[in-house]
Length: 262
Image (cartoon, rainbow, N blue to C red; front, top):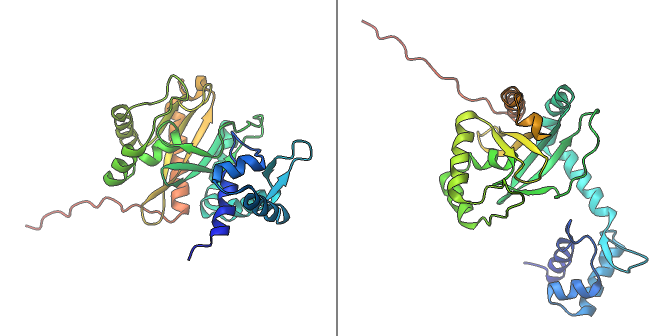
C-alpha cells in the first residue's frame, strides 16, 4: 500500500535539481498540483527532519544536509566503489587525469566515484552526477553491452539533446559508434557532453558477466584525443578488467580442441 504523504514528501525532494537548487513554497505547490497549505505541512516536516533548509534571506527552500549525509553513507557502502577505488586511485596518480566510475540507473548513468589526481585542480561538476548515455564515454561503454531488446527500448525512448556541436544526435550514428566500442573494447567522448573535456571509457562486468557499471578517464581533448589515445585506452581497459575481477568476473578461457585420436 502506498502512503500518499510519503509520496508527496519524496516528490518535493525530487523537485530540486542542479538547475533549480532553491524553490519557494508557491513553486512547490504549483509543481505538485497540491494546495499551498498541504505543501507547507510537508515542507515543515522535511525541515524539522533536516531534509530541507530555508534560506534566511530569500525564504526559499533548498536540500538539507541530511540528504548529503545519506549520500555519503550510500557512496561509501556501494560495492562498485569499494572494488574500484584502488585501481582508480593508482591510474589517476599515474596519468594525472580524472578517473570516474558510474552505475546504470534506467536509461541514464550515475557517477558514484570521482578520483582526482593530486596534481590536478578540483573540477566543479557542472552537469550533476546523473548523465545521458548516448554522448558520454561511460554511457556508451554501458550501451554497447545492452541486450538487443534493451537497446531497442532505449533507442525508442531517448531524446537527443545537442550539448555541443559534437554531440551524437541520431540513431544511425549512435549504433555505428556502439559497434566500434564492442570491437575495440573502449568508448570515446569527443567533447560531446561538455566542451574542452574528452574521455575514454570501458565497461565493468559483474560476477554474472553483466555490464551495469563503467569507468572513464577524463581530461583535456588535446591529450585524450591526441597521440596517446591508444596507450591511454589500454590503461583504462586494463583498469576496468581489474575492477571486473574484483567484482567476481572471470571470463571463461578459450579451450583448444583436443587433437583427434587416430
